[in-house]
Image 1 (spheres, rainbow, N blue to C red):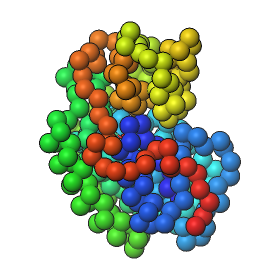
Image 2: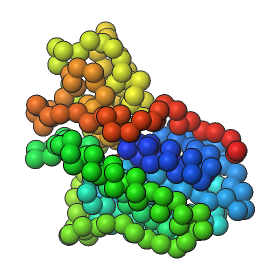
Image 3: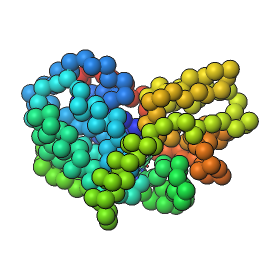
Length: 264
Ligand SMILES: Cc1cc2nc3c(=O)[nH]c(=O)nc-3n(C[C@H](O)[C@H](O)[C@H](O)COP(=O)(O)O)c2cc1C
């Protein structure tokens, strides 16, 4: 079983690669409806998600707190990040331990950056993004082999000042920045509805053809990146910034194809 969350597609792609190699069934964390999940005694349980502000997204933390399942024999996570994961592993493991479970392995995989809603942050230039994807393609088979043999390995790139970034900036991010209020559309909006269809937490609806954001935004920025005419902006911070599309780098059907499936 793999529990996954992805905003812009990087973590969905990693999920897809892992699921294909490990033959796992998938559960979208954002769509989980509190049902009891049956974990087989020999079944591995994985979590795949992006790093937000050097920590697991709040949605993932909330999911760990409420998912109904028995203790897995082997539990792991794979997080994707633009550069560094900070104390994501510690924060994740602590949440899992609080449920009475154990986290046996954890990995970070560097992928193209999607964070653009702050001054100084933008997507990677093509060459850097392609290099990151190529490195991820090399790294994932090694991770798969280690997961297959249920190894106890933690291999996450924390980066410098990890404690400060994760616990001080990360906490402040969850407290003050999980708001959709700064989002707006420019006159370029064609009312295509892609933003509403794509939002992984169903936080966007259309009113008179224009997107309206509700109150449970995760800041994944899927709406910004997916808009075919770059009409979605986040305050002044995204003005003139380019969009990232994983489909420019890998051929995959990605998020829309990743649904909850029964055991194979
Ligand atoms: C709100 C937000 C915060 C982010 N924070 C970090 C971070 O702290 N460290 C990092 O290396 N990348 C960070 N990123 C980049 C993403 O973790 C990275 O691009 C990830 O692969 C995106 O996954 P997704 O496409 O599945 O949403 C952030 C992205 C967003 C949208």
